[in-house]
Image (cartoon, rainbow, N blue to C red; front, side):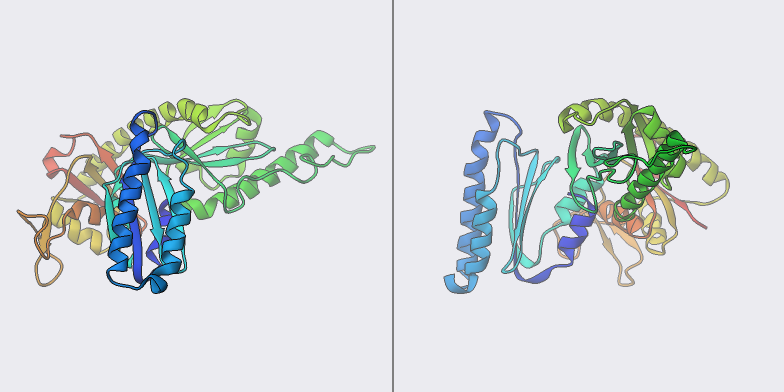
Amino acid sequence: MNRHDVLALQQISGYPALTITLPTHRTSPDNQQDPIRLRNLVTQATDRLLGEFSKREIGPLLARLDDLVNDVNYRHTLDGLVLCANQDFGVKYYLPFTLPERVVVEETFLTRDLVFAMNRTPRYWVLVLSEQPTRLFEGTRDTLVEVQAGGFPMTHEGPGGATSLPGGFGVNVSANRDERHRQFFRAVDEALKPFQADDPLPLAVVGVDRFQAFFAEVTAHKDSILATLNGSHDKTSPSELAKLVWPLVEAGLAARRQQYLSELDRAIGEQKVASTVGEVWRMANEGRGRLLLVEEDFHFPGQLDETGIHLSPADDPTAPGVIDDAVDDIIETVLSKQGRVVFTAEGQLSTHQQIALILRY
């Protein structure tokens, strides 16, 4: 699941929209209880729906839910599972982060837990360059899930790929082949653009030196490239590839954090920094946030005044009118306005009260 999937779910409305989330397990014996727990949640959801609707009225939704449950492959679950169903739509996702156990029936699908987990978990894209084919993966820590949409996986079908290059006297076959590869990897880069536009994540690029050089020459995503892994990995499984890529990404993220902290120091001298959660909230909502830095475990239950501008702390995150975590809302606001978000270790932003926003102006 990526941010595009979440946005697509958020566009669907109409009561009843059923969301079931639960933590799952990757290995035995822990995963043996997962089917039982899911069935219990399905029973809870069914009872709730039948308490409001007749079986005939809710039949299509229950049928979709049944299909989703029967299609769960418990040998391939990760750390979380989400099922979403209404009268016309049903989808499930295996997630590489844990979720609370919930059954929610609302006007829209429950996405807040998904957004929260995605915001707080290191995520990245992995592009494996090849002629047969180039693959795109979504990475979450040490888990990779292949993307099979938006043209991926992409195979080099043209001359120099699946078909032979034209030859003959005076034809420079090598130069022709190189130009065809540039064209192919330019098409790969174009296919990557919508994914980066919807979910602008760091990028790891994998491939032999020659393909890496062609891609570096044509890509519009140079600034996103965080790590590279040289070598042919056409047949490397996602799990094995993750073991090779994640340490490189992790090291790259650590190096970038230091760069961003240095950038914060420079921005302080230029008076382009907002500190404290209240000030950051206001500036983020004005669209002034270019880069948000926040300590990993910083949470802030808060409440707004009648203007909707000034944020103050709240003692009870469950009380009516209280935002249970204003930090999460700030993160979403900055991202929605094309800003970037970086998490730092505890104590690195203590002089800013755990959160700082570098401003555009």
